[in-house]
Amino acid sequence: MKLLLPIALVIALTGSGAAQAGDDCRRPMAEWQSREAVTARATELGLTTERLRIDDGCYEIRGRDADGNRVELKFEPATLAILELEVRFRPGADASRYLPGARGQSGKANKPNPGN
Image (cartoon, rainbow, N blue to C red; front, side):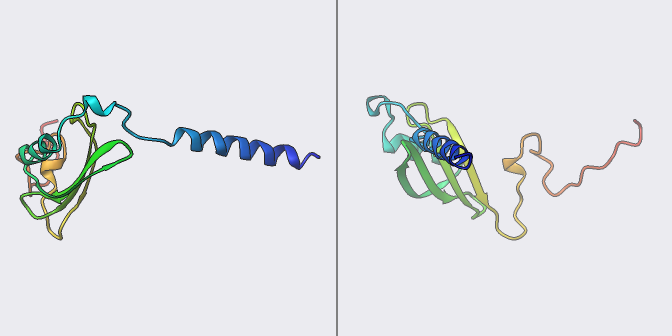
C-alpha cells in the first residue's frame, strides 16, 4: 500500500505537466500578423527565409543570416516579438552580432585594463 502512494503521486504530477504543455503562443488567430509580415520582419533582421511554419501556436522561421549561418526564430504571432533564437554557426563565424554589447568588437579579445 505504501508503494502505491508514490506511484500515484508521480502519475498525478506527470499528467498535470502534460496538460500545461500546450501551445507556446496563445493569441487568437484574429490578432495574428500575416505571413508576409513575418517574412518582412525576418528580412529586417538580415535573414533570408527558407521555411516559415506555425508550431505550437507561434510562427517559426528557418533561414540564413548574411554570413551563411543557419538561424531558427520563433515569433509571437501578434507582436512578432522574438521568443526563441537558435543559430548554428559555421566554422570560424563571427558571433558578435548575436551577443549584446559585443558590437564593433568582432575578432578582438577583451584585454584587461591595466589602469584599474
